Length: 126
Picture 1 (cartoon, helix red, strand yellow):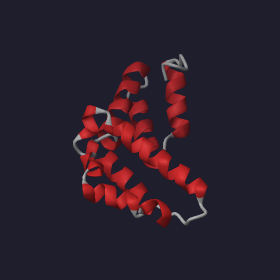
Picture 2 (cartoon, helix red, strand yellow; picture 1 turned 90 degrees about the vertical axis):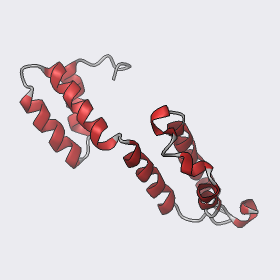
Picture 3 (cartoon, one colour; picture 1 turned 60 degrees about the vertical axis):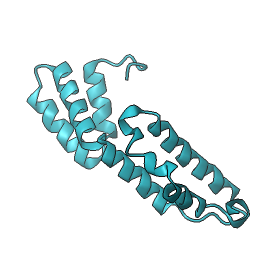
Picture 4 (cartoon, one colour; picture 1 turned 90 degrees about the horizontal axis):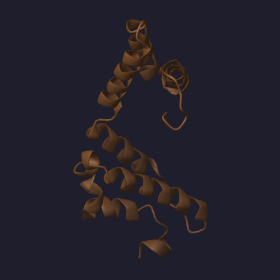
């Protein structure tokens, strides 16, 4: 939000627009509770979102679920290779954060690597 140079009310409006149904409900409740101090309300909303959705276990479960749902790539699906590469880049990027490093170490172990390899087309998996 700093890049946008948004004021607290603008940031609150953006959050309200882009949050999912559950998180939007919580954000609205916290916004109303802090109606006279929008900066404090914004801080409370970010704390709640981080507490609820930024916990290392939640982030790891979400990334693992996305990898589990990713289909096995067929030999001619080159665009899917890029999609898988993007997902793996996201996992690697999150893994660089000390907060998530330990819980995402699973992807560095043979079990995690094998799970990724099973998604590759046969000519890449060998």
